[in-house]
Amino acid sequence: MSGHDEARATHTPPPPLVLTPALEERARALARAPRRLLGVAGAPGAGKSTLAAELVAALGPLAVVVPMDGFHLAQSELDRLGRADRKGAPDTFDAAGFVVLLRRLRDVREGSDDVVYAPEYRRDLRNGVAGAIAVPRDVPLVVVEGNYLLLDQHGFAPVRALLDETWFVAPDDTARRERLAARHVATGKSPAAAHDWTHGPDERNAELVRATAVRADLVVRPG
Image 1 (cartoon, rainbow, N blue to C red):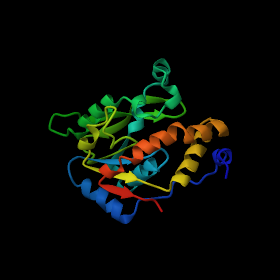
Image 2 (cartoon, one colour):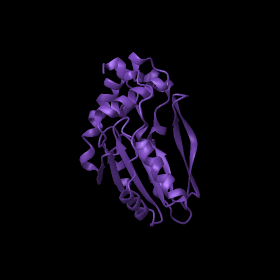
Image 3 (spheres, rainbow, N blue to C red):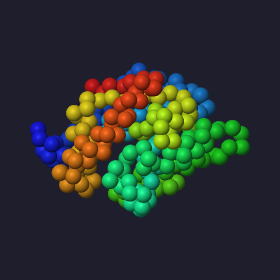
Image 4 (cartoon, rainbow, N blue to C red):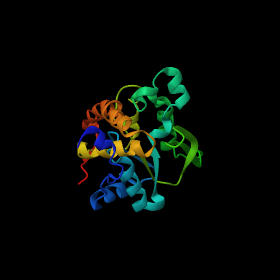
């Protein structure tokens, strides 16, 4: 398959389901404490969101997903900084704001906030939306998913210590790139532009993220 044919594969299957009984039980064990943060990391298109969604579906009211993507800098700010052509790189996020949120999410002392609100990223708006995700104080497990949870640069260094456990999702890279290109087409890029972005900025970010897998507690390899 040529690069442009790859990008045209708009019917590329979604990431395979990866939540095994063993992984579910591992997450449930974390959820037995008053508040734990589970990090799900991986390269762009790895299936982090799929795994996080499966966890919440399985655990129900015991878990809430908080994606790192809510801390994308606004498109207007990326334009001002001259970074719009590599959106998704570490320095196109508000890493300091993300760290502050994680510290608030860990704080379940008496007198702490009853609800902590987190932002979510809206691809249709190309921007984050503040206050979109509610995390009540009595939810024991927060599933934090994102590319740079294990990165020790660009302001993300404090993140690893704020997570009680981290999983790194490591699928087949060819399938990951095919899904990623198809996702770009589905959200408005031309097939050629989707191919170029997948094999350009996304792949540079993927190389950076892959190097952080050694810091994870568990590497998950979807079948």
